[in-house]
Length: 148
Image 1 (cartoon, rainbow, N blue to C red):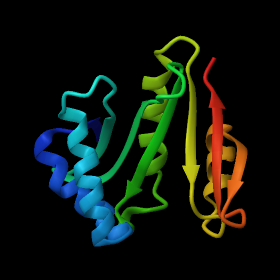
Image 2 (image 1 turned 45 degrees about the horizontal axis):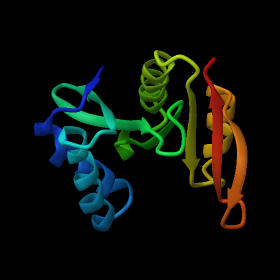
Image 3 (image 1 turned 120 degrees about the horizontal axis):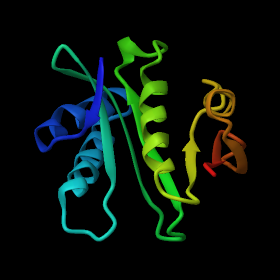
């Protein structure tokens, strides 16, 4: 498995992976967001994909927050359903964190969505994220990580 930057040719397959994990509505929205990496915005997202045998099996993205130039938001961490729980998502997040760490004084936030799946515990145990806010009867958490 190789983790590399998203290429324009990857957008359709990557959005389809998100659609498999969520819905067609999310697939459409994700395709638009993925295209932003190659747009003209001053603050662009960066996406990494996990590729095996020329097939995209995972992705994750991040971008600088509009609130604070040292704060980076991590999002769309997704792995193909049949490949979950194999460490692929962890490798993607490790790559994202390594990129963010290159920015002096950087911090990261992530919105985790599913307490029942153990998303919050996963990010706490594997990366040392801390919950800073809870929403929707505690199923969604905003989690923070200092990278100094």
